[in-house]
Amino acid sequence: MIKAILIFNNHGKPRLIRFYQYFAEDMQQQIIRETFHLVSKRDDNVCNFLEGGSLIGGSDYKLIYRHYATLYFVFCVDSSESELGILDLIQVFVETLDKCFENVCELDLIFHMDKVHCILQEVVMGGMVLETNMNEIVAQVEMQNRMEKSEGGLSAAPARAVSAVKNMNLPEMPRNINIGDINIKVPSLSPF
Image 1: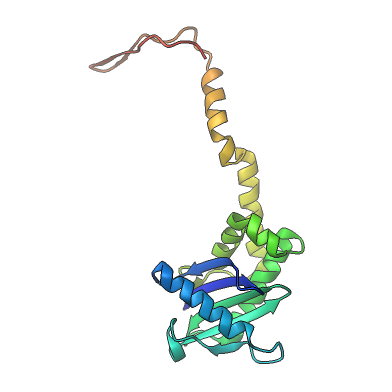
Image 2: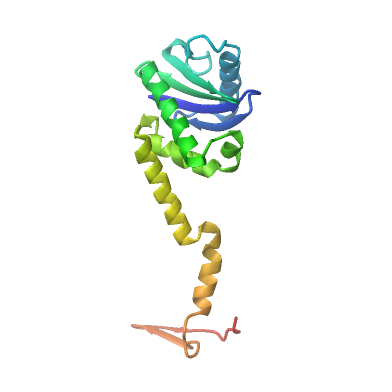
């Protein structure tokens, strides 16, 4: 099972953090620092697997990572996961990001965090791998984007609600509303 997914830059700044096991916030920060220290000091020509740090579970856990340009993609997994399978999963995740953002870079992770989390949730949820087919993941993300565009985005919702009320073709404001035995008197309201 995947315990955590961490993405940070060459300077140790976290760009995406997802823990699938509860850790207090200060412990999470320590784990991020220790993980960065363990991964960043390794040469590029060595194996991409190593034992988890002392904070995240020691030898029971493995850190599996890939270094792309300025970003480290680190998956912390338990001993039941295949190292090569997780490396392939990292590759699928990065290629999916690359397809969705057209040459993904660190700034895309910063300014489009919601979309990155959406993509990650299509791949992994609750520490379990959901989907590894990149075309299926991209199709789901594109469907989500189309749905958001058709709805005008969440930020447009209040404006649409006000315009819908304004455009209601009521001859006059109702003064009394009768629902069965319930009578409601509506106070006089000023027009919009």
